[in-house]
Image (tube, rainbow, N blue to C red; front, side):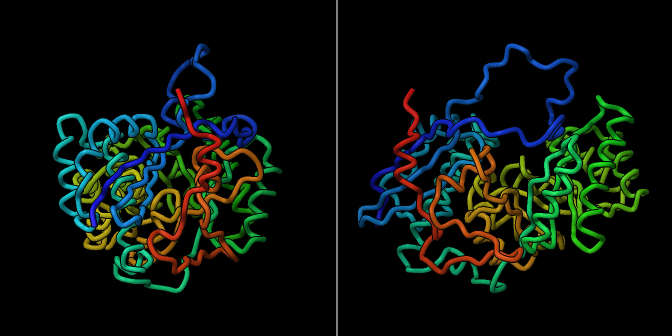
Length: 395
């Protein structure tokens, strides 16, 4: 068997998602600026998603998706990486990964190139599963449990606290025993913003009670001193967060380590880190208590396996960003992944985190707070080709 064709399917926007909340829905790295960029082109990038399909000479196909850098990865795959894997055996994932990585090292190493490699690698594993008649998790060591516990991940910050409380109650009613919300405020908002962050967490905690796990995401929007002070204030309030996610910029490894050493609340990170080399530093410098990569960003399944093993050697849990099938197969096959992130399906136009609900058929839906994976060969999902055709991006 060999790969005879590499196909890319860039998709344009499905529309403008509705706002997540009133006010500041999420603190971000851009929250540092004094003024908003008033001349920013509305609508964002013209390419919202990128599906990569590998076709073999036997007719078996595999599919992978790029994490965040869709437009950039498209160019990299079409102009370089596809020529590395064409006419190669799809079972040779180890050497193909190293060739893609090493042959792009002079302009890659992290970011968009690794995300491009990720999509190709996931597609290779999809092919291997289909060729052997096995779900990918059986190729990774089999299931460690019959189903995966999930946490509802949404609860964006909003000035409408009644709406926030109602949303939390809806997830409780659906059977979730864990949730994650978003901080809305950072250093620019000072003490007033800190009090608002506490108010946000308290609103959800009062709805779900003391026994439901609750985490919160700062999405790289804080600095070290603010993070330490903010987390200690949350601890003093007895709000008992399961973890605080990405408190500072991803390259501030020393800052991560300083925060982790200064607070009792676990610190998670890694959504914006790449390859085993990045995670060797993140883990080795005790910067995080929870490893939080995303398989379609970090380098695909082949590279993620090495990071999972590294985390296990340090007794660290791996709780991947975003859920989805490319993560679920690894979660269910590893003992150090006790829970999965779950983006509830939207009632309207999806945002970037929710696009997969529209792009794919077969994504499992949570039932009573748990996800059950199919035993279909490969990844167990296929693109909605009609939707792909409808939204195919043509510049």
